[in-house]
Length: 322
Image 1: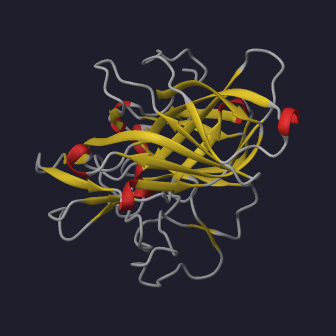
Image 2: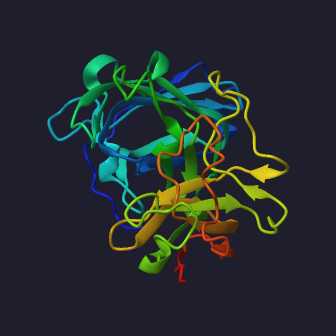
């Protein structure tokens, strides 16, 4: 497994347009960049389809740059992708190669096509539901483009953690789903690592309140020395629908989480290099992306939490054993 494999070129590159003009004149430095999308899957979904239209990039110099995504194989001026096809270290290239001014970009806005071009399919009911992206835009954080002297292309991956970003509307998905920017991150591939491994089957029902065939997940938390902190499940205290319930005492939110499949495998594809705590739990069924769930215990069994270090442009294998 490697996150630095060559991705297929989906179509010819489109033109880059800028809103405003560079004030730096001939002194502006440039670099070639590409953008891909990848995801961590969400519980009980068979499809999460998003139609990507363009990226809007806001430079610290005050300019905004609009990049259309590559045409698809049928010549459409968008990329309609099932995110569940690009899990772990797999990624879909949506912008092949563009030249951008170097520097810090304060914000990325992912523009999507409107209406019924985005949808979700539910594993449990086989129903298809509307996927709403408010204003057809996902406002994400920033990233940095560094100047290059050769033809190197800097690759960035837009990583969707669907367990954090996909939110059900109404009861049992009858009103569809929202896709929100919480849990969607921009990762510089040159600074990224991958993590994968196996979980001992004996752990699947070894913890408190666990059933063998459901709820098996691995959670990843930033930094080391988290012994005094409660490892929380996924929730978003900034969401307008957050009910205000918080863990007791000090806590830390996960950077990401990944399901353990029926073979005992888990994988995180595009993770910034650094120090982390990795933890297994066997009772993380239906982790609500907005509300804190006190019944989810992490780690479970309680000894299944470990400090690890991820080095850039490297993959790490870590196995959980009873």
